[in-house]
Length: 223
Image 1 (cartoon, helix red, strand yellow):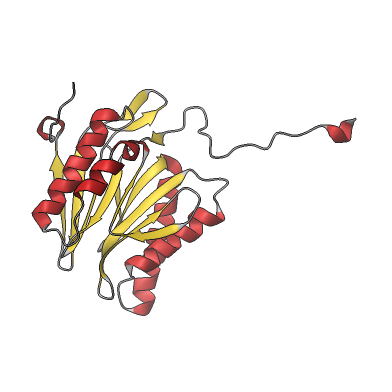
Image 2 (tube, rainbow, N blue to C red):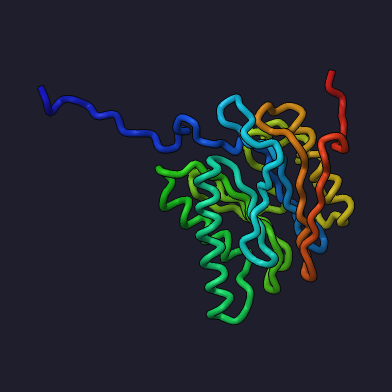
């Protein structure tokens, strides 16, 4: 019977042919005076490396960054929308937006469109109300405030390392080394992560970018 025919519902979260995927390792760490966000730089299309020096750290306001994993197109579009709303907020309210507000915007967009998007976002930054803070917005659209957050395909390899080595109120140097080591370990195991490491150190006074080329990465036993 015609009415018995079952139409297959399209799965929008599957990659379309040729769609660029940020198979990736992303991370944000809160330390004593600020937040460090970091990521590898490999963008893949299937097994083909489309870009080996991608900047996955996206600024959405002066002291707020996001790290993107999932579909490059989806996450770029969502980050652009959040950037627009945060700029409008700053102009109308006369003060910078909070990191929590930025995370709430990401969460609303990701949750409302969860059937059409492939997006995992980590938001990190500094504001005058909460100081340094980190929020993770997972693929389903829920938001979680955490002292550190990891995401992307490479994160599955480093949960144990991060749990064993993270400390509250780390110094700037400790937090930078912890983030570098974590991302380097993920890059060494995950075929979808690689390239270079990009970091952004966000404090009350400034944002400092740190670049670590592929031949200067931390090295570990590789068998």
